Image (cartoon, rainbow, N blue to C red; front, side, top):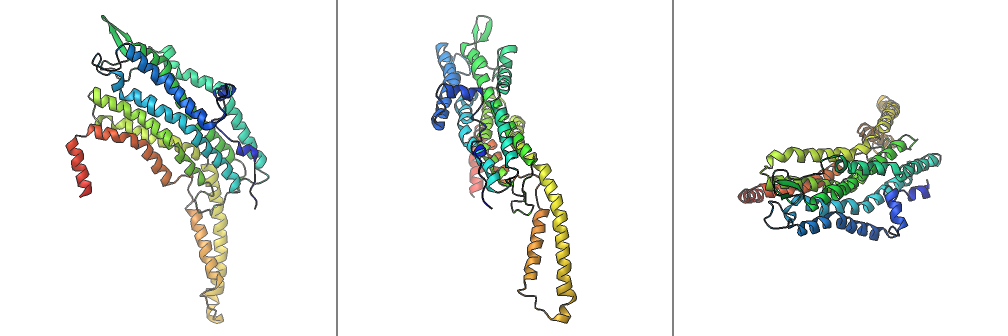
Length: 396
C-alpha cells in the first residue's frame, strides 16, 4: 500500500493564521519562523516587563525599602513575564510542527484511504478557515481586557503588604505608574496569549472530532491498544512547556504569599494540586473525542474476532482432539497450533483496547511538567535542617 500525499495536510498549521499573524506577514516579520518567534518574544518582554521596570525605577519602587515588596523582589511578576510569557511564544513553533506531524501520520499510517482523502482535506480547510477568522481573536482581546475596562483597574498580586503596584500620596493610595501599566497592558497581553492557546486547543479538538467521524481504517488488533491512534498520545507530550509555564505562574504567586504574606506551604497545597489535575484534564480532553469511534471499533472487533476464534477453535478441536487418537497426527510444529496462539493473542489485544488513546508515559510527562515549578516552593517552605535530613535519609 503506497503512502497518500496531500499538499493540504503538509501545510496544516494552527499558529500560522489569524489577524495577528497576517499583520506580522504584512510588516515582513513572518518569513523566517525562528527569527519571527524570537523577535516576537523580545518585543513581548519589551512591552510587558521592561516598562514595569522603567516606571518602577522612576518612582523609586524597583528596589529599596520604600515598599515592602519592590519590583525586583516580586517573584510572581518577574516569573510571569520573564519565564512564562516567553515560553508561551517560543513553544508555538515546536507544537505547531508536532500538530503537522500528527496530521500527516493519518496518511502515513494508512488510516485515511483514497476515497476518504477529500473529506480529510475538507476538514483541514474548515479548521484553517476557523483559525483565520477575526471574531475569535476579537473576543479573546475583549475577555483579556475585561477587568481593565470594567474592573477597579487594580490587579494586585499581594493585597496585604505594600508593594510596587501602588503608591501613597498623603492619605490617598492609588496605583503607581507601573501598576497602571501592569493592569492595562501587561496582564491583558499575558492573558490574551493564554486564551489564544486555549483557542488552538479547541481547534485541535474539533479537528480530531471531525476526523474521527469519517471512515478511518482502524485496526482493533494494533499493538498500541488504540486501533492505530496511539500516536496521538505522544503528541500531547509536546504541550509540556505550556503546562510548565502555567505551573510557574501559580508557583510564583504562591511563593509571594509564603514569602511576604505569611502563608504556609500546607495551606497552599490545594491550588497547586488543583492546577496539576486541571492541566492534565485539559490536555487529555482533545483525545476524549476519539472515544466513540474506538469503543465502536472494539465492540465490532470483539464480535468478529470472537466468532473467528470460536470457528477456529472448533476446527482445531475436531482435528486434534476428536480425531487425534484415530489419526495419530503429531501436533508439535504444526501450523494449526501457531495459528491458534496468534489468533488468541489478537483477541486478547482487542479485549485490552483502551477507550482513549492515552498512555502512562504522556500522563507522567505532563504531571512532571506541572510539578517541576513547585520544587522551589518546597525548598523555600522547608527548613534547611529538614531538607538535609530528608536528603541524607534517601541516600542512606
